[in-house]
Length: 337
Ligand code: 13P
Image (cartoon, rainbow, N blue to C red; front, side, top):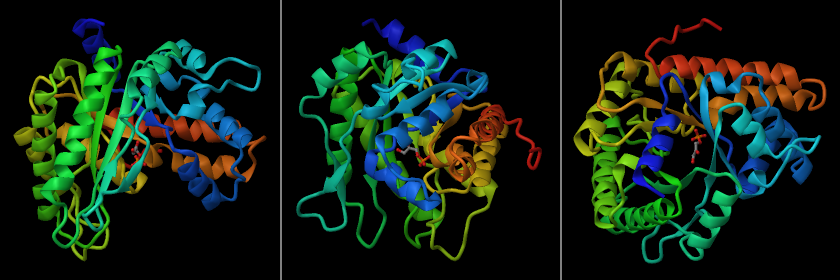
């Protein structure tokens, strides 16, 4: 696979006014989301839910790609059209989550390391054959008393870089995701410091593993106040801090940065992205790769009647995609919907 092809895919993932929908919840995570709205978690309910999302009419107007889970990339619509085919017909690039989740980091209380490198080359080969053109790996960094440790950051960066190099070898664009969690009562300054160290460590590791940044996408967490902090930063503060942190630690050659929503409200996730783009021009396109902030409103409606509410839920998916697509241009109008 040439770097030109990887770069082309990466650029298409962050095409103007478009972003990504993350629907790569593991079976355990989707179980939690379904339990919250009273939907039974079966292979068929997961399939039907993902069919509703992926067959949203005109999804490709604002969505460039979707991240799938191992089970989902093998599934098809009720009438038997593979999801990857539906996506490609709508101009939505198939992506795949390839990490195997987090485990406690031995010897480091409260810290996690992401696993999944064993056998990854063969899995990537298979996913490419199934139609995937990009792959996501999520590392999780916790903020707390005396954490994160340098060891935790380095272990996660090393794994991200190893996975990214394997992806490029197999023709998939790596979407590297070092998520600094919002959990805790820390202030936004602490989140800034941790995020900067994490990003510097990641780009150092990518350099050491010969990862070509022209064919890589960063999935970043925003610089925000801890969820339980008494002082919540304003939209402008979040946008300014996030931009400054990214500008200091992320090379300009990267084709684009997409954000996770991480537990922010739908409105906050959109407002923050919009504010950052209004503050541009920025060195890279800044867009979204939201899971919860793209899905939660639609999931609630779908859950009320999974047979009758498909079109209603899809209308909400489209609205969220449109709002976030406009925010990726700095053109979102609050309260328009
Ligand atoms: P959230 O937007 O719900 O944080 O999910 C994005 C994601 O893919 C996390 O890995």
